Image (tube, rainbow, N blue to C red; front, side):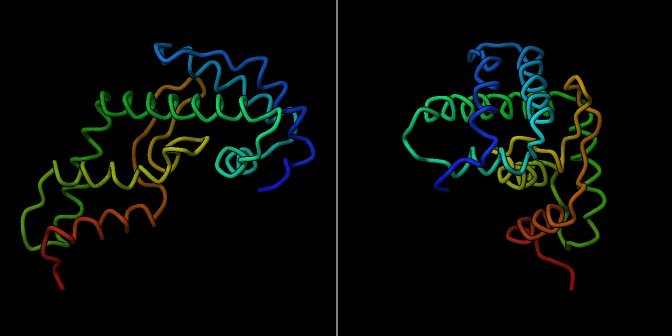
Length: 172
């Protein structure tokens, strides 16, 4: 990516004003900053897709470089904290159990919940740098609480099955 989209210089300056965080910041405060940034995106008619593209691909060394590095670091921290919150939530255990039970008929050997969980985490890794986090698996409320954990993208579920097939014999 060579140039920032036309509206990004102003947008980035607005983000810079609210992007205050530290590694030991509480999840609640991380989500407050995240919400402020999302509001800035909305006010500037910016799509999350555009922000993701800039976060992932913009690598020109200029006046925005430090801010984009800071934004990437914040995004990593936010997504890490979302995952930690999910893993501690009862809904995570329910999700693992449900996926284990619902997919058992596809395999000859008994699926172990630990293997299902390990492979779901592998599926989640593709979203670790996404501004929306693990949005196809972990649904958040407006204030960052975990509302639901499930596969909403069929491709994610298919990826899980493909990963499990590496260890378990598949029913033909």
